[in-house]
Length: 541
Image 1: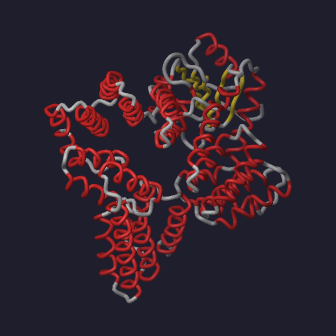
Image 2: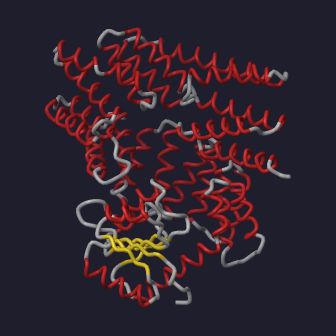
Image 3: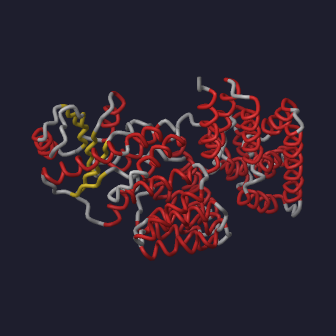
């Protein structure tokens, strides 16, 4: 091995002490002097909180608690791994389902047991050289400076190195997508495909088609990728989203089921399948997926009380009230002092007691809902729709209609959720037209407010334009349409009159909010890139 590892800090995560000793001996032979051992994920995470490691060697199976996949998942979620770190997943597992699961969170390397010193060193050396070569790009990405990352990528592409060009085209295409430059991304993927029929490049073209609302084209491309590379799990997720976009719910569900069968340890995918199956009325598939999600969630940062509530709803529908109450109790225990869990529990109890015609217990459960909703403003939209239904159920029609109106205002540009609101409201209120008419009226009002704000800005009435749009935004803080137009107008103002500290703070707040409410990365990336340009110009001497 040509790379000097003397200064490298290594975290070795392995539950068997004899194997740790063996790997330590190999590392010492390579000149490593700083090795921290961890026998499980908890010890490893605690070590990563205290110091930054250059290399993490982690076994997949770590005993009864978190496995290596979940450790990597949490380390990335909590940003405990520096961008320069090398994470190598080590496992004796040979089953394709376990290998795919281990690769879900994209470790830098995957090393099968048993391995020798040469195999380990060659993987480490390969990744050190790769990260050194791409350091400027990854450093810029780590700082969320996509414009600088693109510049560094273009610089390396200009060197015309045939050994690295394909890798750089892949990175460049992904960066271009993130900033909404679909033309460049498409050119990069087409260049790759002109040389070799690589599945990831065709997948990239499918993503571009999807983001441009060309859903039939995207579906065709994703299906080609799956036929060519059936183990490319990410493509199943995108194909599912494409089927959802064209309202082919059964195809979406079938696609996700295939992905789950290939890689059953992915919690987020199990959660998604449960929700899709529940909406489609496929109780058997939904129950199975919820149960798996609850089990996987025991050791995952992506555990959710929604899984417990979803399964409890399934039990209520099949009149298995005992199991429903058991899940509610378990949910409260798992998510202690969690407002969302408390609200989901109160909602479920209200529904159950109402169904049992127990007025006293219904009132007691329903009384818990109001204080929680008043104290918290980050309640998930699906839960708010459930609460609107409960309001109607107990005869609080005014509160139900108010909440339905708020949901429509906030999510007027989310076609899938609006359809769900209209359908659910028709079902529980027996009013065929109310929600649909409210949606049409709300959309028209928001378009009028937006157009008025844009016109005011064009006429030079900047303050009035902002006051108008910010007023609409404050009323509907989760409305993507208003938020993005507010950000675009502020960008125009910065171009016209310059960047100030107040404007920069506002722009960053809008971008953070957009990311939080699920605005697509290409749209937020485009605004971030433009803001970066303007910031750079304003700081020039």
